[in-house]
Image 1 (cartoon, helix red, strand yellow):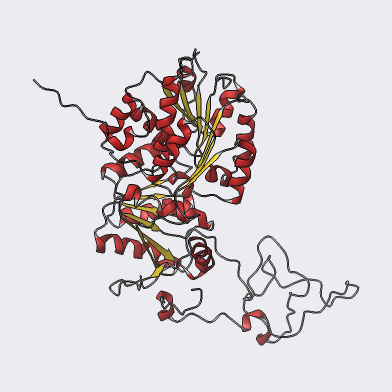
Image 2 (cartoon, rainbow, N blue to C red):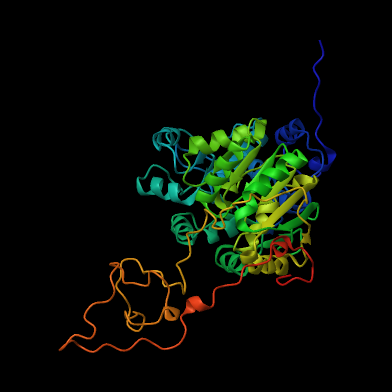
Length: 485
C-alpha cells in the first residue's frame, strides 16, 4: 500500500515558511502566492510593523495568517489559559469566523490553538474556551471589551496585533473600542494593519499605531478588481424587485449575492424573490448568528440561490467562484461599492457586478465613478421586461414623503399662521380638505374681541403647480448624454 504525499509549492517554499505550514498550503491546492502574499509575508516574517492594502479577494487573510503561524511556532514561550499570543481584530462576525477558519486550515499541522470571539451568541462557551490555552484570538471589538470588563481574557501576552479590514472598523465607529483595547496591550509588540483601501483616516490611524512600518500596496488606491465586469441599469426604485427577478430567471443565475442599503429592504426583497419561485435568504445585523450562519451555508451549498445582504453583514463572505453580485441599491459611501463588487472575481477568477440605479441615486453613482476613476457601462433594460401595470411608486425601503402643496393636513399639529384659509375664499385659492388637523375650519376669526391674526399670504397655493410626471420612456434611459452621467 502506497501513500500519496503532497509536495510543497516551490513558490511558497521560497518565502521561508515552516514545513508544516507549507504542507497545509499544499493540502488546499494553492501553488502560487498572490501579489499581496508575496510582498507581505517576508515583511511580517522580518518582525517589523506593516501597513498593507490590497483589493478584497486578493488573499489578504493568508498574507498575515501564514507568517503569524510561522513566528508563533518558532518561538518557545510559556503560555497560560486565556492569555493569547496573537490578537486579530475584525469588524464583523462573519469575517471573524472566516479568519479563524483560515488559521485552523493553515495551522492544522502545528501545535497551536485558536479561538473566535464575537457578539450575538451565548457568551458562556467563550468563557469555557478561555479557561484553556489560546495562542491566536480572533475577535470583534465589542465582545472583546465585554471579556476584558469581566477579566476573563488576559491580553498582557500579545506578541502580534492585527487590525483586519481596518477601514470598515473605522466606518462602523470602532475607533474608541480599538483605543481601549490598545491601552491594555503590551507596549512592545508587532503591529499589522490590513485594509482594502488607504484612506486618509487609515493613514492617521497607522501613524499613531505603527512604528517605522513597511508599506505594501498591490493595486491603485481605491480601484476595483479589474477582472470584475461592471454594468448598470437605470430603473425606478419601484420596479427594481420585478426587474431583479426577471434577470435571475432570464440569465439563469444560480448563485447571486445582492446588496441592499437597509435591513428592512433585505427582508422585503428576499420575500419577493421567494414568492416568485427563486429561493432567497436575507442576512443582516438583526438576524441571529445562527440564522446568519445557516443562510450563508445554504448559499454556499446551492440550496439557496440568492443571498440578500447589507454591507456590514457581507464583510467576511468569502465564496470561491462567486459569479454574480448585484447592487440593488447603490451605497451612499463610494468605498463600499469597492467592497461589494470585490465579493466576486476573487483570487483571479472572473465575475460580474450589476447595479440597479434609480434617478435619486445618480449622485451616489457620480461619487463611485470618481473614486474608481472609470465610467460604469450603461446597459439598456431587456425589452422583454414589462413593469407591473400598477406598480407602487413608493419603495418599501423609504418612508412616504410628506405631502407638499396639496393642502393636506399636518399630522399632530394645528393650522400654521399664514396658511389657514377662511370660509369665504374662492375655490381657486385652495383644495378640498384644506382644514386644520381637527377637520374643522379655523375658529375665532371675525368674532368681536378676538385677537387679530395675520391674513393669509396672497397668491396661488403650491398645489397650483404640481410636479409634472416623467415620460415613461425616460424611466429606463441609458444614453451616455442623459443627465447624471
